[in-house]
Length: 613
Ligand code: ADP
Ligand code: MG
Image 1: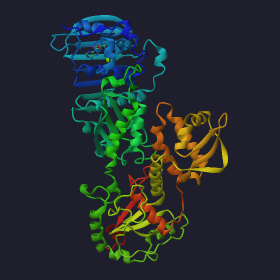
Image 2: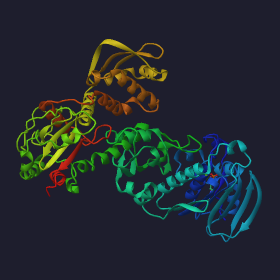
Image 3: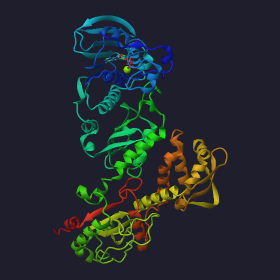
C-alpha cells in the first residue's frame, strides 16, 4: 500500500488559481479524464445518461489508489501531483490543483471505486452531496471507476444552467474528442444512453484525427514538424481545400493540454493568411511543446488558458512551422494541372521552357483559331442574364514563344533566365472585363484579374512596409469619420503604427477622427470604408497581441480595398505587367482571401466539349 497523495499547505493553495471547475457534465468529464490520463491509463471508457445529468461514469485501467489515498483524494487540496511551490513552475501532469474530486463529490451522488496495481482488492467510497456515506472493500479489476449521478441535485441554481440533453451530450462529445486527439496511444470509448458515440483503438495521430474530423478531411492533411527557440511544433494541418466555418476542427495543445489560446490562434491564422478565406478555419491538430517553466497553466481554474513567458517567441515559432508547410503549396499545382508530385511546384526556368516548347507543338491547332470569331465562352454568357461587355481582344501573339522578362517588378529581381509561369503565358485577351484568357501550351489559362491584382497589391504593400513604410497619399480635404468609442480609442493607441501602414488619422475628441492620409494604393477607392475596416480589426485584436502581429492582416485589408471590382478593361501592357508581377508573388495560386487566381482548361477538355474526340 503506497501513499502518494498529500494535502497542500496553504502557502501553496493560495497561489493556485481559485474558482469553480464544475460547470456542466462536460467539465466533470474533462477533470475525470485528466485524472485517468495522469494515472497512466491506456484504456478509458465514458458513459453518460441524459446528457450526463443522470449519470456520468468513467472507467480506467490506470494505477488506481490505495484505500488511504482514495479517502484523501476527496479532501480539498489533496493531490499526488505537486508538493512544493517550485513544482508549480514546472507542471507536467494535467491536474495539480487537488480540487476536482471534492468539488464533483459535493454536488452529486458520487461513487469512487479504485484498485491499486498489485493490490488484491479495491476500495469503494460512496459520497452524497460531499458527505462520505460508506467506505468498503470491493472486488474489481485494477484501475478506477468513478460514477457521478444526479449532478447538481443539491444546487438547483446550477442545475438551471444546464441545457438540453442533446446540447450537453454535444459538449461531452467535444471534450472526449479533444482528449482522444491528444492521446492517440490511449483507447477511448464514449456511450450516451447506451448508444456508442465514439470508439477509438490505440493508433497514430493521423488516424486519430481522421476519427475526430472525418476521413475525407483527414486525407488532405500535411505533417508539421518544426523547432525554433526551444519550442517544438508537431502535428497535422489542412490546406485550403479542407476548411471549416468555425474553429471546431482546430485542436491545439500546449504540453499535451488542450488549450484555446489567443496567441496560438493568431499565429495560426497569420500563417494561413493568403491561403484561406477570412471567416474560414483550417482543420488541424497541433502540439506545441515547450519547457514547462515557459508556460503558466495556473492562470484559470479550468486550465483552458495559459500564459507564455515569451509570447512572441511562441507566436513566431508556431507561425514559422506552419508557413514552412504552407509555403510548399502542394495545392498550387492542383489548381493548374494534375501534375505528378515531382512537378508539384509552379514550373520556372529551364524545365518549364522545355515543357512549354513541347506543348506548343501540340497546340498549334488551338492558336490558329482567331479568338474573336470563335469565342465559345462569350456565347455561353450571351444567353445569360448579365449584359456582356465586348471582349477587349488583344491580337494573339502567334504560336507560343518564350519572351524575355522586361522591367523587373520586384526590387530584388529574380535571375533573368528564370521565366515564371505567368510571364510565359501567351495572352489571348480579356473576357468580360474581369478575366484574362491566356494560353500555356495545350492549355487555356483563365485568370481572375481581381484576385490576381489583390494578391500583387498585397505583396507590394508588404515590400513597401519592409522597406520602411507603406506609401501614403495626403487627402486634399481631410475628412472626419464617426466611429464607435472603441474604434476611436484604437486611433490614439496605434497612431504611429498606423502611419507605418500609410494612414494619417487624428483623434478629434469623442468618437470622431480626422482622416488626413491613406495608403496610396487604396487612396482612389472607398478610403473611409477602409479606415473603418482597419480600425474594427484593430479594436477586435484587444491589447494582448502587438500591432506588429496584425500587420499582415492590415496589409491584406488595404490590398483588398485597392482593387477595382467589376468590369475593368486592361491594356495588353497592363496584362503583361500583371502577369509578371504574379510571378514575383508568393502563394500565386490564391488571393489574400483564398479564392483561386487561375483556372486551366486543357485542350483535351475543350475537345470533349466540342465532341472532337
Ligand atoms: P488533481 O488531479 O489536481 O491532483 P483531483 O481532485 O482531480 O486533483 O484528484 C486528486 C488525486 O486523486 C489525484 O492527485 C490523484 O492522486 C488521485 N486520483 C484521482 N483520480 C484518479 C484516477 N482515475 N486514478 C488514480 N488516481 C486518481
Ligand atoms: Mg485532477
